[in-house]
Image 1 (cartoon, rainbow, N blue to C red):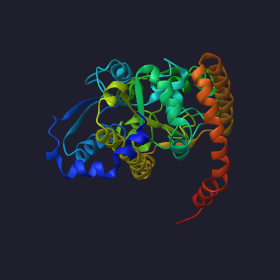
Image 2 (cartoon, one colour):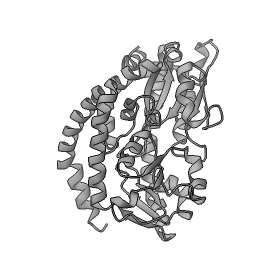
Image 3 (cartoon, rainbow, N blue to C red):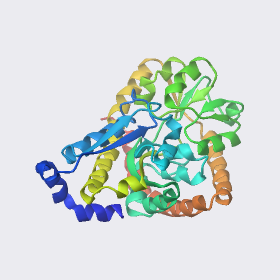
Image 4 (tube, helix red, strand yellow):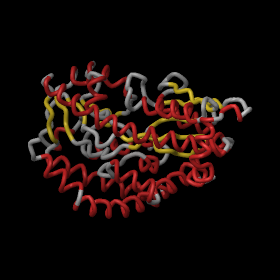
Length: 360
């Protein structure tokens, strides 16, 4: 069933009626389990699932309960896709690009190098072809997707040594989120590694990796990366606006009555908006604290960005030959992005550039 139609058919009145007159509903409460790919210590990215869960409970007046389980509590962080697909759990909260190794098209549902920022991703998903194309693809894995947060543009990670040029990446062992950026970094000479967020600090501390990226100042400070790596680079050109998603088992969603489907949609929308706002609110002070703690915050040199862009375009062309799903969705995404860049050049980019040079 089309989720926009479900929301229209149920209507706000239905949701409100559910909250105001719970006694009308005699059926037993619906209980779902949600497997997160994130540790509970990260109240922002893990917290998106908790915002969703609380909203579902409140809007349904307790008829619908979603219990959130941190990474590893039910299944490992990178096994949540299998758990939802098989029906072991009804839903998950994750970054779709974690499953790039299954099919390159997964990355297009979250972030790709030199892709959308958060607003552009929302525009493509909600008013372009993004959600339809991704859900057509996810149907092959027995999934539906709902936006479950966005980090905004991320930082470029923590490094044990200064980055002066592309040659500094040669042989560098680097933890990266998602296999796509790993493919790009491999072309630049790095050794790309993948590991859950909760394992990064120890790997840096033991020098089993030379660099790592996670999200941004608030999360990175909580994880203590500044204590084990002195250099903090920006921007995270591979994550201009990382969308997290709620993956839901198609059979489980189809079994919900119309009003609970509408509640899922509304709760996901709330969690999605809340995460980006929370990161934007918390990152500035965290960055100030990192600078005060003598973290060296530096921009990637322009030659590094140029080389990364070229390498990314080569990987994207290769993916066109590896996955027909990638080729179809990527072409639509880039066509949409061209118009977004055109528009943002006149409005956001010029405004932001001017304001960043002013003293307030």
